[in-house]
Image (cartoon, rainbow, N blue to C red; front, top):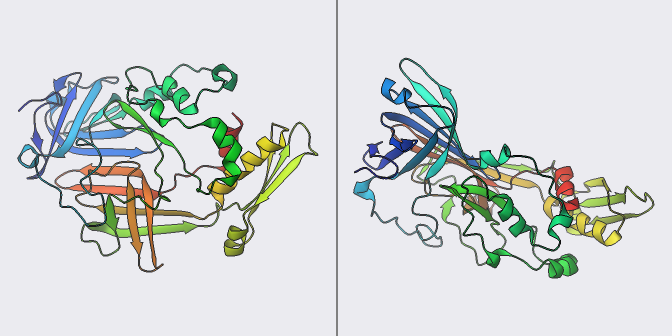
Length: 358
């Protein structure tokens, strides 16, 4: 039955794809790849094997795609797994896509096109020099909301409930017992942009999924982990560019005892020692632990979204930890494979310092 995404095209007995180009149903889809990582645009690559479909394509055309369980299984219940939030959270349509065609690769037998979501429009929008003094004490969350109000991106759901008290944060940051929690942005569904900060350190949090090397739905190379100490910084010294004699040094004794000394010096544009202390503390909290990442290929996991927490069991390391999904790829041909990358999205210390100084 036709919908706003076009008529059903069955992948197999479980899944179907619906798609339109400029509002017209797009038939003859033989392959789909949805690739997405935090703080970037989602990319949809579609394979077609029909001349008629090729004639519908143009660079800049609006593409809508819905991929998920077929109508036969639309009301199928996901089996609840003890100790997780499986099937209890997230969107009912986690793979809805809205974007514009950027690349077309025509062929006599097979054609592919690549579309990107509306975050890509933000990346190519007119440059505006946004200065802190233009916004005063307005919460940065709400500043980001205003910036994202562009060419049809939906922002109405981003409200004041997400704001934090800047004054309280600035006064108490050194006494804050919580680890560094990072905000990400992404359009995870349709045209709606989200700002989210998955807190894996909260003891009340549950993963939406548990994975370990022995999981039946893990395929390919299995659960592949990486623990990298090259990113550690546990001793931070910041010098003032305005007044080189003014500097601060902060260290994390527990990290130094555990991993050894990893020191780094930075130059700061501000001469205020309180501001420099806060900057050093933020860098320390973000960088004092080795980077842990895991990649995996799964079946029956297309519903997992960016920012969802995954519980990883690693028998070799004797650990059980929660990590947020920072990258997701869904490949659809005659079967459906979901590739996930979980852990911390990388950020260079210099880039982090630049963000702090803005």
